[in-house]
Amino acid sequence: MQTVVIVGASLAGTRAAETLRDEGFDGSIVLVGAEEHLPYDRPPLSKQYLSGEWSVERLALIGDGELADLGIETRMATAAVGVDSGAHLVLLDDGSTLPYDGLVIATGARPRMIPGLVADGTRLHTIRSLDDSRRLAEHVRSGRVLGVIGGGFLGSEVASVAAENGADVVVIERASTPMGDVLGAQVGADMAELMREKGVRLRTGVSVSGVSIPAVGSSGSVDIALADGSSESVDAALIAIGAVPNIEWLANSGLQIEDGLVCDRTLFAGDSIVGAGDVVRIRLIDGTIARRSEHWTSAAEQGQRAAHNLLAGRDAATEFDSVPYVWSDQFGVRIETFGRPRPDDEIERFAVAADAPAGVYLHRRDGLVTGCIGLAATRSIVGLRRHVHKGGSLDDAAEVLGAAVPSAMGSAR
Ligand SMILES: Cc1cc2nc3c(=O)[nH]c(=O)nc-3n(C[C@H](O)[C@H](O)[C@H](O)COP(=O)(O)OP(=O)(O)OC[C@H]3O[C@@H](n4cnc5c(N)ncnc54)[C@H](O)[C@@H]3O)c2cc1C
Image (cartoon, rainbow, N blue to C red; front, side, top):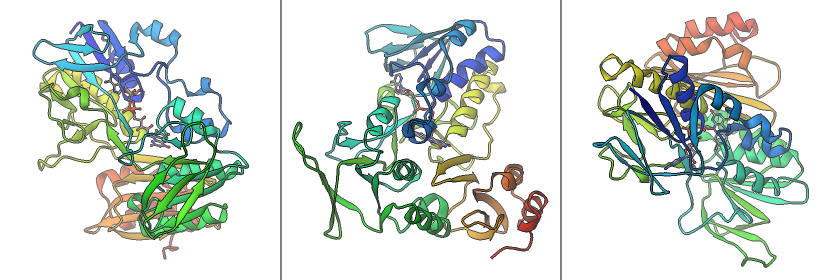
């Protein structure tokens, strides 16, 4: 293999490029990215960067110097518009083509929009890129009223920064609790209580029926109409209702595209083509296709595994087999999840500190621990990732917890 092209210059793409070099690949690597910025990290965009605590320099995933040292060529502000997998060519939006021997597809995702609306970056916002975060920062300060549509991780993190900075924040979530689809009703309710304590107005169990924005150049508020007939008037609204994969450019590639790039368990999507990160859906052993992961650790680990397997070749490729890990920082609490906790699991709570809402929630299905949620409990749960991986019993998991935090033993409720 002489040339590897990586499309998508963010976390998964960067990790893939680094891994190729770490594993001794000495051919050429071309990293193609639609954004003008060199690869940067997204989690701080809704946290430390949005709040003004971190400067832009801290976001860099890889700098000019490292790129040069590793011999990675970049084509920034350039989008791939197609793949000719027969001829092994990537087609670019400037009309040029890039030949490849190996291709890594890591084009990630973009914000899902409410049909009919366009985020103009002044009154109506989404958050995915550095530029989005910069524009939104204007509204997360005292004297502003921010409406957050969608109480998932991202919406809740932005609400946290805005409330802490003194903005008046209303979060509108159609489920009965924020983040309930991931955290379940019990943890969602604990987080809702905390959000209210921190001054956020929560409108749960109601969906948005319309958003009207004042004409460009005119003052006036953004009106968010709700399905129960009420409305909220805000200075600006953030739409945080999930993400859609960047797959349109692969339409004629011959690859399997179904709400993501479908890859086998070794992350191969086709001949000499691997996928990594938020764009990927993995076909499981029973033939079903898993949901896209859309979290930092999976994207980083998939970038590494995809590059490793590309070099190894399809026959020697090894499975991507990792326990999902997700974190979110908001309202002074780190939320962490391991495995695939589902709201309909049996859930057991262990208190790990005197202060609410600190706690560990172990999820069980068919008697085995399949997931874990920690609230302000990093030290307690660090040993549980391996345990969740092997699908251990509740008693064993409680023992791991008890060893870390003796007070956790016997305090299940
Ligand atoms: C604001 C924010 C906060 C987050 N916080 C957390 C957190 O606290 N914890 C956590 O676990 N996860 C978090 N995440 C998720 C995490 O950042 C993502 O899972 C990760 O960025 C995915 O990396 P990726 O490389 O797969 O895709 P992306 O980061 O989406 O990057 C894909 C890149 O490909 C480019 N691209 C798209 N199409 C093309 C094309 N045709 N040609 C060339 N380039 C293209 C895009 O412009 C983009 O730069 C957060 C995400 C966001 C947006």
